[in-house]
Length: 324
Image 1: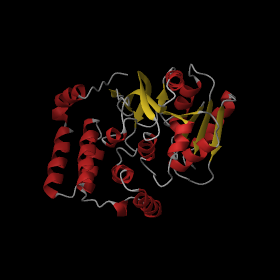
Image 2: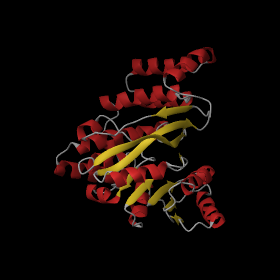
Image 3: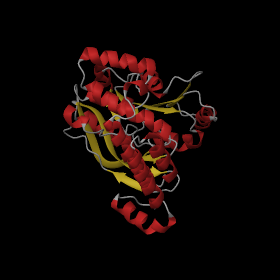
Image 4: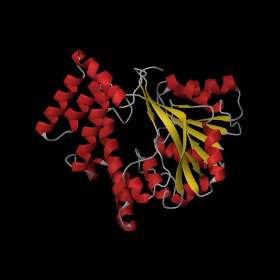
């Protein structure tokens, strides 16, 4: 069983992620960690840790040039030969029984091509925790179009289903996982282990919160869903255009679905305590001036010290606990 984890400028979280994988109750694994030409010493720390641990299961690949996360995953998976491929988010933690439980499900259900689990979102800066209990059970293509049932880092895949679906596609710099699931659900079933087996750490410099990164990521998300519903020839043409020019020319900022995602993301950032990021996202991306003014005003008021009691109530409503 192969675990793949990719790093780019995440030197501060290397140890906790690698240790969480190598401490699994299911020990028959190989762990491939690749560094995508980081500039903060991530590659050095990976190599140092490999030397310190001297664990033959742990393999480090250092890219001499930046290939991008998706291409890094494609290459790492191609360099392995296990029947099962386990994704591990860099900076996240797999709880000790994660791999054991997911392997058991894939062994027992040969028609399942990808399996996730329940996980907890943890805000790195505040320690706020929000448990998530997604379920992929019985989800078909139409159901998956309504929203992703995985967060990616907690997923284990059957190689045969991954290959049959066509694997990750390098044109998708973001949402490469959602693109894959939308193809994989056509050739296999998806499943979820109903246990909390993964901790996903939220960083406000990530694609879900950084305003500029999210602006791009949101377009990839919509394109992923739209391409999945296109005729084969049209989809191929769109993917070629995406690979050549990126998503910005393919979806205009004023696209109504895109504007809805911006508003939702700004509100989510505000609730998670990233008021500065939420305000910047709204200022840079909401095209309707009255809507932009109203949203920015709400974010500023919501983040003020006077509304601290309200924020505590909202946190409880959203199931967020600040206790580690």
